[in-house]
Every structure is written in C-alpha cells, then in structure tokens.
Image (cartoon, rainbow, N blue to C red; front, top):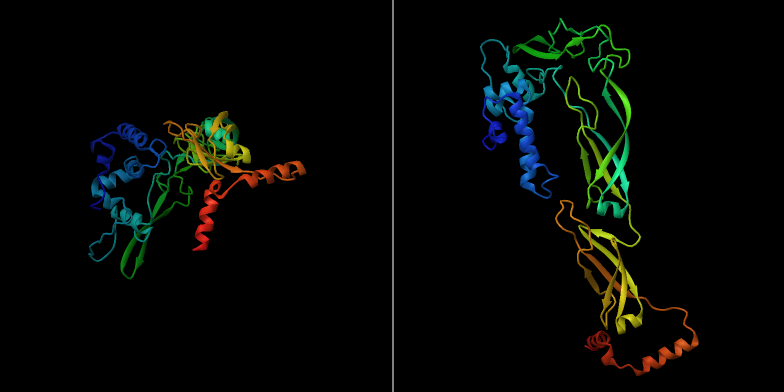
Length: 375
C-alpha cells in the first residue's frame, strides 16, 4: 500500500469534503488528465486512472467509510489481513472487508446499496467514413436503441399513486446475513435477499409501461461530431447518450469506433499522406511541371531534370490535420517511370537512334553496377 497516494490527496480535497465537493473535484481532475486531451501521454493516462479509482471509492458511502477507517486496506482486494480468534468467528463489520478481499469467503462479498444511484451502461457501435471525412472531420447521424427512463412512472417502476415497499426481510439493504456453524466456529456470510431479489424494495403494483423496471426501450437518432484527423480504429465518446442510469444515476456513454474506407490514391501514416505518381521517360529526363492530387485538390510541382524512378518528394502541409488541432502533416509523393508499350515502327526507330547516341557516362548507376560485377 505504500506506493498508493491518499485518495483525498489525489482529488485535491480535504477528508471532510462533502459529496458535491468530491464530485466537482473529480470532474476537474478527470478533465485535466483525460486521454482525449492528452494523446500519447502515459503520465496523464496513469493520473486519469488514479483519479477514477479515487472517485470510485470516495463517491460510494460504504467504501468511503471503510477507507476513512482502515485506509487502503479497507477497499483494496489485493491487501491481506489476519484476524484474532477467541473461540468463534463472528466478523461483524470486518466481514465486509474480508468479503471484498476474498470474494465472499468470509463476509460473502461486497455490500452495496441496491437503491443507490447507478451509472447506465454504455452503447458501442461502429461507423464507416471516407478518407477525406476522417481528415477534415464531419457530422454524422447514428441511430441507436437504448433504455430510457420510463416517462409514465419517472423511473420508479411503480404504477401511478403507488410507492415501493422497503423490503421487511433485508430492511432495504438487498442482503441478508446467514450464519453457518463449522468445525472452525461460526461464520457469518451475506447473500442476496430472496424476498426482494436483492433489490431492497418490493413493487406491489408495477407500472404498466415498463413492467416495474423503470426503463423503456427507445430508438433515437443522435448527431455525432467526428473530429478532424481521426484515424481508423479510434473511438469517440458522446457523454450521456448511452442507456439510462438506475435510481437516478447518470446515463452511460455512446462509444463510436471509426472505420476509414481505403482511398484509391492515398495511404495514411500518422498525419502523413502517401501516394505514388507515374511519369514518362521524357519527363524524368527533361523535367516537367506535374499536377499532383492532394486531399485539398490538385497542386503543381516542378519535377527537376534527371529524376530517378522511386524518388520521393514532399508537399509541406498537405497531410492530415492533427487530431489535437496542432498543425498538419505533409504529403509524400513517390514517382516511378512508366515504360511505354505498343510502340509503332517510327517510334522504335527514333528510340534506337537515341540509344545509339548515349554512352555509359549518361547511365551512372548502370556503370557502377557492371563495375562492381567485374570485381
């Protein structure tokens, strides 16, 4: 536990902070270290995980109480602890801690309030966009089916004019304690309440629309803003557009994974755009003004005399915009000489006469090759 920082220190608050203060501090720190705002920053990623871990503990009254009393030992399942023996085993509150450590071997598992606010599940889907849309960003509409709070009962699950009954068996905790006699003594374990199904409350007259669940399925069309520079396989998150939360908890998120369609001319390497362009033998020898396609449109480039096949040149600032908004990459164009086919007799004769005028000094690489081969 020595390598873990105090959770209150992680969120920058005092031990007596209120629930609202904890929530505000979490939002501030999570925004500061969020991976979307700190791409490729391993330190920020670790800080973000640390902040989320601290908030998970301090936002839960039960976990917070154990942490305040026992420190990290009260909430970390990797921490082991012993217990005394005085003729029997009745762990009481300590059983909750052992339950969280060992998955129910002593205390029967974690006891969370079944009626506490719970965050809704996130929805995942994929979206295919073009190369240009990925480069410059776009707006897309996606259709999802999600669980939303029932409008008839406002999420209570009860019919109009009725309220749920607190379970008389577990008194709203959703858990009942079971004591077992073993050769080692008496063990107290916790199990879901059979009367209320672990919900802590009983609905006698369920809502006719949601059948007591408090949520109904709806089809929604949501506008998604795709940022410029997004790459194939990356995921964007739209906050609060997932399934509804329970007991007044926040909704989950909509997570959209992007697939970029291959382009006919361009390939991508980070923020660089790569392409190949064919040129004629005459253009390579004499130089020429080329018209090169880019994602911004066609641009002109002066090809120098004597350009060799496989030569790559750069078009500065014609690449992909950085997803964090800091500049653009470049485009790299590799040229290759296309050999003409199906020459007529006149063209062949002209080419032969041209070849006869050439000497080895005009073909430096060829001359080097044969010189090496003689050795």
